[in-house]
Length: 369
Ligand code: SF4
Image 1 (cartoon, rainbow, N blue to C red):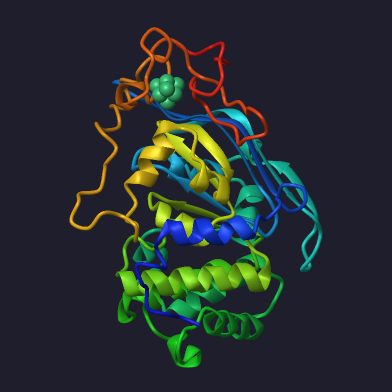
Image 2: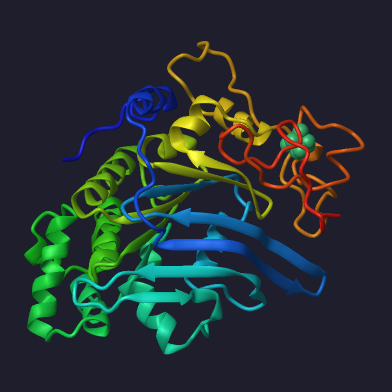
């Protein structure tokens, strides 16, 4: 099932060509719909608008990639969905509609997660049982004092009506499913006894233990070496194919998105700049920021020994947001008097994916400074 990574595996050109022949339609009604989500942090210095009006849908069985540089708000967006944002962060506007039909012994759910109390019973049931997180750092998921098996069993007992013996059987089954060698023996291992790759597999088994409808993978391959990265990505692809899982994959790596995602959301400074099917975004990126990100991905067709282009400048200080389009100080196509004055709205032209850029349309947001 696993394989050693090659440059070809990580080459977006390869995925782009493959996607031209396989253009997946978005399946069914969205299981997760986020509309106008704003999460702000009130600090002594001012209000940080970490997420500032984000919209996207996740459909059943789909892999949605959320991509952008560090600090663009992608992780806070999904922490907001799971109601894991810590004080002084707070959702100040928007809707997070989670809809799941009945099945797997679970009742149907249709709820706005933004209205739930962050520590209440309702969201604690959904978190782990319906929407599970695969975090960036697997060490943080497990207590070093208890075996990984016991911790997976506790999660199962919390969310499912089964006895301890059945929970242990499920835990070993999940460890086997994620490719853990000798799952019976590894059940009694502690997280610090496992290699980085096996630890990440154990975290995925923990996330899968309650058959969640949505998996949120927050840069799950960042803290592991490149060989193990490829194995973890293969595993997630297998899980998605075999179980039809819906996955939100957060990453700064467009190469990973090319391998895994069906649909892409490109974020910058807490806002969505462009979103659409992966084949469209890779084949015909519209937003200058998306184009810059794509140009900075290593490609087999790149000129040898020529430095890759980078996105010029850096993300502005969160308390000093530029007026108008947030990308204008770094944008090679910025139009003075327009881009620095008004915020472009997300709009779709001629059936192309929606984009927030005045190069493609004239629609501005009314309340933008
Ligand atoms: Fe660049 Fe203007 Fe488009 Fe913003 S709106 S990305 S500054 S061209």
